[in-house]
Image 1 (cartoon, rainbow over the protein chains, first blue to last red):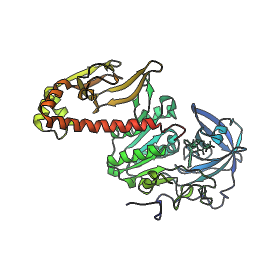
Image 2 (tube, chains in turn brown, green):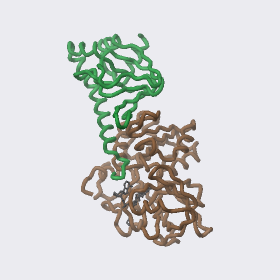
Image 3 (cartoon, each protein chain N blue to C red):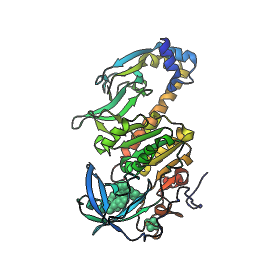
Image 4 (cartoon, chains in turn purple, green):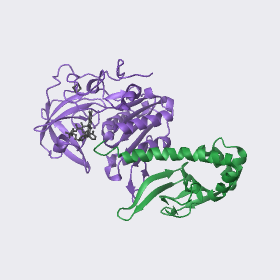
Length: 295
Length: 153
Ligand SMILES: Cc1cc2nc3c(=O)[nH]c(=O)nc-3n(C[C@H](O)[C@H](O)[C@H](O)COP(=O)(O)OP(=O)(O)OC[C@H]3O[C@@H](n4cnc5c(N)ncnc54)[C@H](O)[C@@H]3O)c2cc1C
Ligand code: FES
């Protein structure tokens, strides 16, 4: 099923809409409850609503627009547990002006939050299947809610595999949580880094090299992949090589965003809006785009 | 030896190889064991063997005087270690160190090299298999070089 960007672009996973009773352009005020340093350039922010009554339900894969006053607004995925609706958790890598400004946020500081926006990872479609979660770098943050969700309903899924690759051992996100996940018998976890010093006892090599280590039934698996585009492209190719059909592989796309509701066109690819139709897409819909240079 | 034959015959690397070639390869095979931390070979040494890893973990390292030993790859159960025995001047290009207790089947590359010269069909079969491994490792290395998790990606 070859789709191009000019064809009608329907994402089968884009059924989630923002609540109709809320102006999606109006930020709610949240205050910083806690800031946790994950790595040298990555922080997790725990936010609670300034108005006590707001709860914040979301689906794994959805994102918020975080507005840092005086600096700007950026899309950031929710990295917390979907069953915890009272506080918001975001894990942010510092790359430019807005995210760097977030580093200075302290307990009690206030920021604006719009959302949640976008669709979700296919956690319901995956019921009854094996699930392969492949994360690269900061891509583990948008996938963490998937793991929470799958593990909260563990008996509904077959094998669950987490493959995580990052730059060096020092860049590993959620270290303690990964260790806890590793000790579970109902989950297979493999971690690799691109390079390391001798003290590292784990795997070295790119994340695609982990796929052959994992045990799953390729025709009855759903794969969810998040990370830099090149990493997602090569991971999808390797999964296909191992027999996972491309319509069972899901990836999450990132583009600059402004409105996040499909108005401004900032995130548009052909007829598709990453903010509204995504950010999660089936790989068979997106793969032509991933190798196109001119877009 | 029967055990070695079974393991090698079932290994994907040698799958589909004619039985007389397999017999010949089994004749060049022996079981080896490396303790955690033990070097299997060092860069610059003569490369006269290759290994099929049965269990454990091996790190490939490059030593740089400024940065110390840098791990660039790890190999585990089922992986094939070493192709320098096939390519002149037959010297190892990396250090290989057992990260944990590692058991492997060592194959006498020097002996196989001579057999490949005598019988080019065998040479082709082995080169074809090694070309596949080299291609996979090259792809991985290219991805590593892209440094996809850097801030420029
Ligand atoms: C749907 C969606 C979800 C996202 N979820 C997260 C998340 O959970 N955590 C998170 O940290 N980021 C996430 N991002 C990326 C985040 O929005 C950007 O990193 C942010 O907008 C950068 O803003 P800035 O002003 O700090 O830097 P900019 O000025 O926008 O960028 C500064 C420099 O960093 C580079 N850069 C920008 N974004 C990235 C990136 N993602 N990776 C590597 N380099 C980059 C740019 O090329 C530029 O050179 C998400 C993006 C989208 C679209
Ligand atoms: S961000 Fe405005 S259309 Fe997507």
